[in-house]
Picture 1 (cartoon, rainbow, N blue to C red):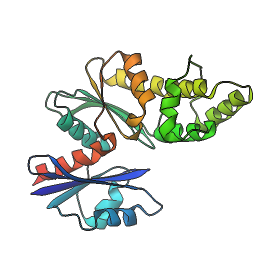
Picture 2: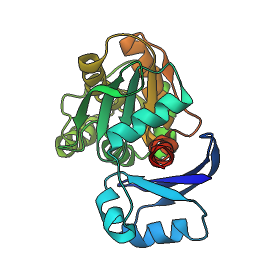
Picture 3: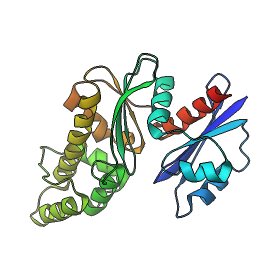
Length: 250
């Protein structure tokens, strides 16, 4: 038996297929374009499975198009993180448009969560815009920030105001690396606050595209004094959780 989970996010779409034991058989990824359902159809073309479940911001469109069950991103990431790290008690997911801090009960169910989905501050989109403003690729952004010799305070977390502040700092000759580190620190400060409100101890599973950023991982561990567990592909965790939950419905 094969079960699939699809995570239709604001930036990318992930599809994971698992076997009856919960092991990943196949995984696929595509960018989210202006027509997410068309992108989803292309991604799923030729993929075999007995049941599928959707999560992510596009899950309701998927439910209508495919008449398939859906699950919230909170539950999907909790289930996927616990599958990869059986002792996990806390999950931080930072995606393109929102961020979530989740604490888990001993049986893996969600105990409490905090979510920032009202603005781009503290999300992948914020970091993407700031990287572009500084002239870095998103892949180089975190690595360059780690090379900064000192911290630089960024006072605004609003994307528009932060972009203006960064532009002013560049005009004054401030180091791009130091500005980059200051931006990372501002995002981590917000994420750490969310985590501390749901969980105060134990390892943290870091999921979502932003978990690929080495500066974010390092600053998170430094700020919270806790071990950060990062999956091999942190963007697949939500789809993995959805696939596992699809199998449990059968």
